[in-house]
Image (cartoon, rainbow over all chains, first blue to last red; front, side):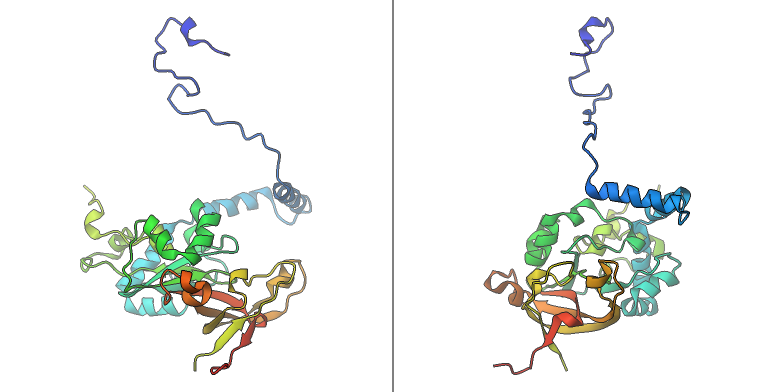
Length: 228
Length: 92
């Protein structure tokens, strides 16, 4: 034992073995060797920098740009579509261009918006890898990349949705969208009832990341805390 | 008119983006997406031909038979034209 608390005369009663002084478990050091692809990434990155193709600062700024993208961008797009029928029609026609029109820097993203209606619910998955509209919504949640979600979403979407707390009636048709190639998808959820008087910003606060993947529904207006 | 297509039942080696669970399955063209570089060449850094890409809609009944949760639910996927063969409307 590297450190015996009982030798100290001040009170260490709240210390437990394996926990930090603030009560958190110590995490093992990540001492595993680099994988093949990690070595490949480092080698290619260092070569690109050595040859002057890019710089470390440019790479860092691209990482910052990706980290700055978040589901709030998609929520703003959804709220605009709820508030403005002409924008909604442009969004359903070409969601990439409609997002660019709002000023979002989504690069060459090809985006399709699929609309939930009274009798249709849409769900997005990528069975082959983890395709996701990152350039609009930022990085996908970890569960989206798991084999369990990727295989079950196409095979038993209703069971998966039930685990997300979404029990859809048999009268609702589920349309699953497998992002197998060049398109990325965003669900345009149905605008919740009772939101008639809300501003675009208030509407955006109802739009969750999961409701744009199809594993959730928008929040209801009364569940959003009113700023004091 | 609704165009019915079947995903080719090929199992070539290498990088392809037609998922195995859809091969041999019949669906309808939901929309045409235009032409995109063939990922089977792009994946190896080769000059890629532009190939037409389609969204194909399958019923869950077609994909999973009796095990479908609800037969009329659907699955849409993007499939390149060279993976599709036309199915006549009144196939025997």
